[in-house]
Image (cartoon, rainbow, N blue to C red):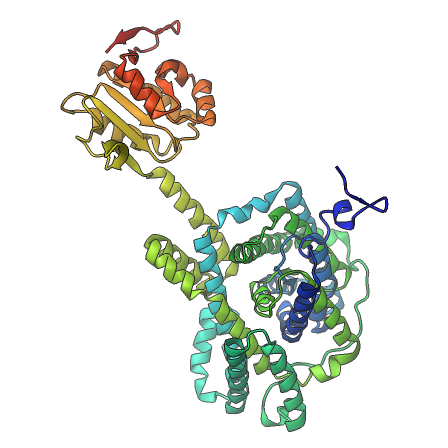
Length: 582
């Protein structure tokens, strides 16, 4: 039944996909998120200018990434936390290619950047049509912790140069750290003092008054102090002047013949956006027990990049750092991002003058505190205690992000997640069930283990497929060969086996023939409907015998006790089977 109010469908029911990262809205939550958005704007405005410089774009275009792209994702995305704006990784990818085609920050360069954003939007939309949001499912919680930890170290190290007043020219984290160490003799004390004051303010507020926007106070206070005490005259670097005004709306002024040479950079940006945005949204949704839809997020990301193209700016991405900023500021929905866009619009119209007094070291100190928050020491400690192997995988992922880059770190995380899963499927838990105190308890599946006179109940903890069926057969043969007394009934507890592929089915059929020659009856229990379908498709039901397949262990043992379980002979050429009673 459809709810109707005054003959009309409610807004959320007419367009359930619209503003999914905002609804439901409460007055208290809206006020809290709006304040978080104001704080995010205070921290993000100068940072966006820095991303514009990385991208080789005019600095004002960095502010444009915080207008229409944010609103577009808030309207069409599903993540309540993900902040979609300028990002250092995609900015660097963009500059690396476009700088070879057009002069940095030229009109042609800006137009090409807009076309890259538009092509990236198209790639994201195609990804949604093919439902590629599942890529996020290949990142385990362990490796998400490692990924965010690596991003925290990467961003924190990148900010050290600005906080210390040391010149850093490299965009590689290890080289940045080396340049900082070499530049320590040139450390600028006034810059360090200002950055240290900001760090103290933020950490003290976060410790004793976490509900107050400490970063906002630090930004406003530093701008006022800079204007009053002439920070620039004391050698403290300020951000560049920004030309005010809202962006013009229109298509990039380029020839469509230039598309082929831009497709590789668009594909690289697409890969970065899908993996990094999915990893970030997944991490924060998991941390706060929020639901989100990766495929819906692809639509939001596509719309955000299309908005970037139409508003004269460059590719936008889901940012781990900025998402951490809005969460740390108390934001719990995309209302915070819309508030940020509104504040940025006011800044562009009226406040670009005072913004010039903001010291670069203040921005660096604020981002540094966010980077520290991304390093989840508690989760790493828990992972190490509960699963040392996964702990090392998390550290490898973090190290890859720091040493090589974010994109490589995410790809490695996906690869390691898959390998970790395959490893468990390849070497699953196995056991022989033994009756203890009236219940069946697992014991190691070693030669000589048995469940009763002539009976072995073997438990295999994964689906059977081409890679692990050899392990299954080897374990079975080790249990039945040389057993004393001889094994008469091999019962396979298939509760964890939901499927059998073609290769495993052929090997299992050969095993059944070998068991027949040894006068051993093969019985399957706890078979699920999907497994039974595979057994029928591969004709294993005929080879094993449908009367040897039971729903419960109790039923199988009763059939064995009643001598209703037989040895199924090898299938003859016409498909008939001969039976011999044990």
